[in-house]
Picture 1: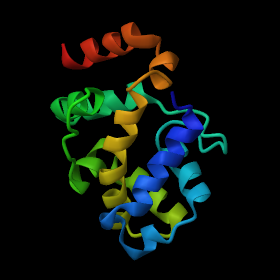
Picture 2 (picture 1 turned 90 degrees about the horizontal axis):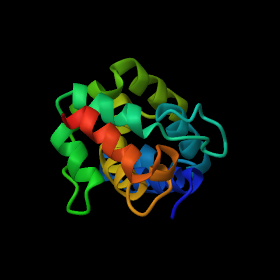
Picture 3 (picture 1 turned 30 degrees about the vertical axis):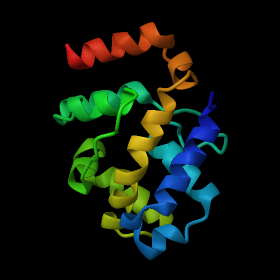
Picture 4 (picture 1 turned 135 degrees about the vertical axis):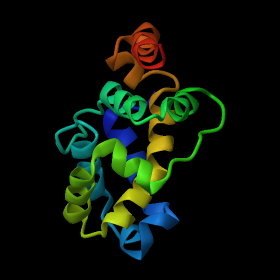
Length: 150
């Protein structure tokens, strides 16, 4: 079971390894990236990765027409990929730009790294607890999922 901090570190690692985050992305400091990810994903950027707002992330995906993608991330099968444009529409261009400038990346590098990191992050968050616990266990996840997927 992963705690929030470990989850964000894993997301940061996926971001750094992403080919889409470019050379700048692969040279990032992982604690800086972990903090920026926490800020973007609802943790307020606290150093302990104080939260990952999975509910709000999933509802952003749903309102962006990405419900099927979200389902693939939450389930145990293969994760569907997401484009940089979809990442940008999910969070809003200004949030991606702010995230990019915190890290000294271009908008495209930031969105590209997120496109690779988010599926892994949500997949790991939804397997075996951690985030599930924070949203009320499996029944909480099902409530969120039923709101999203009808």
